[in-house]
Amino acid sequence: MNASEILSSLKQKGVQIWVENEKLNIRSPKGVLTPGIQAELAALKPEILEFLRDDSKPAQGAYTVPLTHDLSLQTIGRLIGEVSEDLNQESKQPIIDPKLMAQRLTITFRPLPKGFKNTEIIKFRAELQQKLQAYGVNVAPWQQATTEFRYEIKIPFLNWKKSITTRVVKTGVNAVIDIDRPASVRSRAETFAAEKLYQLYSRFILKDRKISVSRIAGLIGWAEECAAKYIEDPTNTQVIVLTELDSKFVNWETPYQQKIKMGLNTLVRTFSEIVIGVSPSQFSILNMNLSDSVFSRNEIDGFVLKSLIPKVYVPILPLPLSKFKLGEYQPQSSSYAQKLVTLSKLLANTNLFPPGSKLSEVIKRQSHRDIVNVIVNGRTGVSYGFVAYAEPPRYIGAIEITESEWQSLSPVVGFNFDEVRQNGIGRRYLKTKIGAEYKFKQVPDIWILSARSGSNKTNLSLENDILRIGLTDRLLLELPEGVDSQVADIKPSYDVYVMLAIAMSSALYAPNLISNGLPMIHFHGYPAVEWFQEDEYYVGVNNPSVPCGTYESGVFNFLGIYNLVNQHGDNISLASLIEPDHGTNIITPDLDYLITRVMAGCEQSEIELGGKHFTSLKTNTK
Image 1 (cartoon, rainbow, N blue to C red):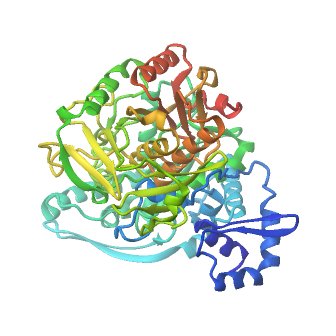
Image 2: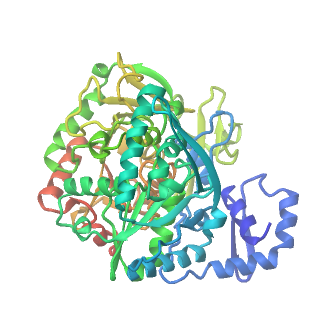
Image 3: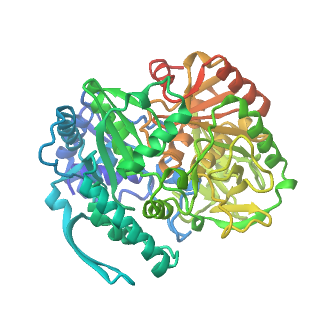
């Protein structure tokens, strides 16, 4: 290993290494620094010292993640529900530092077509490549990132065969960056023919059975002009398209409902996960979060590290039902399900929750709908925002214990013994630092009532729209009694990790927030800094803009509450957890207070959809 590799490996295991007075300082969880690792550190000490000195000098516009927390990231990840398929295994290590994300990425640029003359896009493309490489991304040449691929298309009944030879981007490449290529007359004709042939194949051969994304792409790819034609497996490689900036889309005066249709149509038309709009003075970024973030050209350093790299590293994917242990509940007997219905209806007048869009209405081609259907795990629509209500946390036995009692507890499989232990009946306890004092708190069972994905967030049906999500030693999902998940389109929200992280962190660090239940909302906009009153706080403005609902976004929300408590104490009337390039989560301990404050913000134009108020948050501290 070199210095960078060993530091990255140890950081993932919770080891802190820094330089102070020209000396190497190490703080490590018990058992991590084996004799072999200690020998490697000693051998590489001069190189590590030099690397850390250089790393402490960020480039202009560079972004550094504030890692103010006392727990290892792996423990936080496990606490919010991320575990491997084998529940006895440790949780996946979250990476929240974009510099470490960059080192794990491989990106390629598709060659420009002959005669391409948009000088602004050419200039931006070259600068983008240079910045990605500077941050440690492996930018692979096109020939190296692709491999030759041959396949044959057969359409029965028509006795039609076509043999295709092309080059495709290898599965291990995280993203391919292309430009927006207007379709030629020939490509339009080929696309029309390919789509008709695919419909015949789907109806008579597949008989509506599902097939893989790569198989669908193979059937239609020969006629495509877009970069998707050159991808071996679209579930592993994102397409990023550079195009001219859409000034109407990034204009704050454009209604957000209109932006939804504009954004979805742009993503579908270019068949890409990310679109970057470029003009001589600005550029923008668009993905399925449908933010209208716009940057000046001199902000490209921070944009690449803070916005683009996180989006490539953690693509938007919903949690599949296979992650949960399924069950049923009676929504009529749940007071918190009823409170959630009340919350949803009271939010209608805020206009913060625009109606969702059915994918069938936006994506006209059946082949494209089938691809998206596989990727989004059978969801038939997309909506923007969530509403949820956490039940009070559940404990068995003492909520908090003494240090001497902690010392007598046993290890928990998958957790760091210095951070989490369990008693004789299996209740887990966490050692955490609040202010200058260590506390030993029981890890509670968390239950949340949440609107299903794609539902109308301002008119929820008690009987059909509300799921009950649990977090004990694993994820649990209870559907309304009598609803068949195989028939109904009733899937959990993309933001499950975020909801659970907020509830768990509140229970551990700000119990007054959640002791009587915790209403929470998420919308794709921001409050202005002037909106906040006494004992109301916001956090997260400088976080990397990881996409919605990802494991990493859950970690950032968990840390957000922890940091607020350590900075302001636990007397919090309202917390606004900011997710850059995405939106805002707002939580309060009281339903009426939440509605009163949000309604006032909307009436005074101090809360709006889109990115209008993000700058005020970024340029002020509170």
